[in-house]
View 1: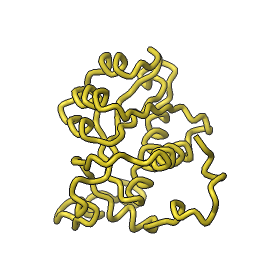
View 2: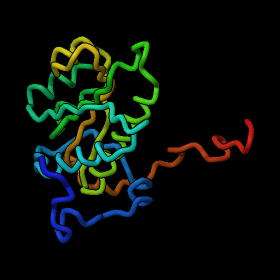
View 3: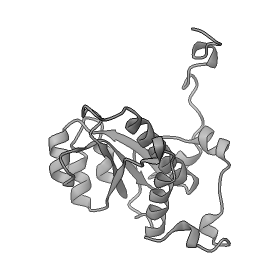
View 4: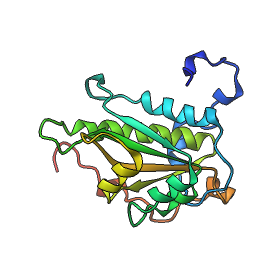
Length: 190
């Protein structure tokens, strides 16, 4: 894997397609993917986006398992009732942390992993690549499929791929899709 700092600054792959707010505001979940594979530099860019996320005390307590093999993706698609999209993804990236249920594990590991995941999702969206998370329900089977150590935990796997329907990249917001700020925000106290 290369360091993104080694890429040429005039490389078209580095040109941002979306501004930050535009990426946040236009992001849509994509559950159906085209058979087109993701280019290796794209997967590497997603991984660099994850590792660039901030983490508590800069401990970077995360690891990522990249899965491209069709049979493995099909196996991962059975780990939860809503994980079926993994079978059609170009790439699945399992997100791992030290076991957050361990007695000495701070809750910040889940916050940090969420930041890394969102970086990957936004970096993918900027490139016209869709994504959706899968929650792992069968943890023993996930460990058997992915082979990670006993003191590590995998709660989520992200699917990535070019959308089967390219119009998904421009889908309008659903009416009522987000609660209004007045229902969420309190000033100074609840």
